[in-house]
Image (tube, rainbow, N blue to C red; front, side):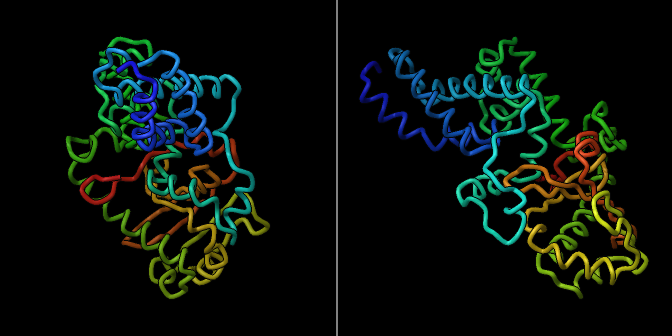
Length: 312
């Protein structure tokens, strides 16, 4: 293919795929659109003459563009480009629809964890695990051998699923047997039961359902926070009544592993605002630690909490 019009038609057909790749790489709809546009500029300059798999070739280009952006972002110490007003977004106002839909389709917890990966790790994981790009092609993007690219993806996968023993804050979940991304069958089953409790707590929080909250909270539960006039609440009813006032914020809460244990992240558009550490005993939440301090948030080991049958 060497005809510019034919290349443009193929690019338009692949635009949705390229945007999906770029969004998972960058975590920002605006930056993803910019990356797709830059991909077109590079592709149109190079031409696709002799290219057998044009979509694969375009995916390689967008991967290189995103890697450059991620490295530049890290050098400047920036967070992902964001639309203004996340505090407003966490309130009653609806967020930018397109970005909100994109973020939710990927998974808010996954976006939070992906933002903690190094640029090359993120590129290798996204391309291989989410889009099945061969390591031979990923190697050319990240400037490593195929074997090294495979190791990048493997290390990223372990961090995403909370099975990396070297990740900060781990509690040993990554040392189990062969079930559920490196957990023993017993540990995976226990985590699945705990996730059900987390889901029930978050559902009740979103609905502002006092009775459902009382059902999932232990009578003597305690809630601590690092950002409030009242830093500690004791008793299920007091915690439930306070939680009902945060129903809007709870819309952006998703289950996550926090230092290897059950918890949740609150992440409008995938941008981390706060973390809930949950202690669960006997099928009820006995303690909630609300972490909002940026330094404490950075120190937490966060991972995607597996769902039924080990799914994220």
